Length: 231
Image 1 (cartoon, rainbow, N blue to C red):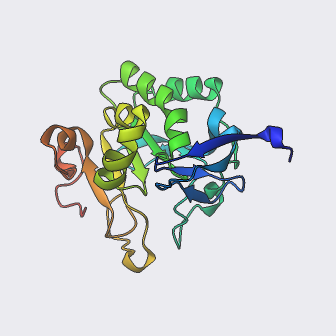
Image 2 (cartoon, one colour):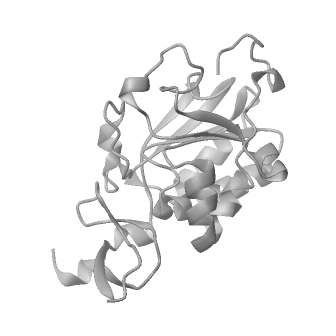
């Protein structure tokens, strides 16, 4: 790999996760009086990759859903069901043609909405890659829902860190209906939970939480789901 394949970032005090050239690890940029040069793989700045698209999905949100699995994740949870998606270079480029295809397909009447999985949809580079899709989806289908699964915590990470340095974070959150947050924890795995894998994870009603200024749990009674469903 030649030096032309990389971009440079000189860090003083910004804090963020940046994928390194290996694609599956990250460097935390923390306050440092001495500037340091960090290598960022150029593809991570220009285009997002995706691992898979799942049609007729009934496992990742209520109703029949159209699910996009993005590539790239720095959490590396033990017991992850999809470890191949840790690599930011895994899969295929998420192009405008793919975005257009998703928007056309999810318009079918039987689809309840769109689900974003990974990988990690809320990795900084993936936020940039998803914003157009999410924006266009809500413009075209305001009655349909967006569910997003993220290892980042809604309050601590997305609002507490990313939203302060990335405009994309709030633009996405304003359009996401339900966020399942928190890393998967193998020692807290619970197969009886609805739409999540471990008991530390939270199913958050994003519009209500943003309006209230505190976390409001998603209520399955707001959908056609059984009121006895365990969340």
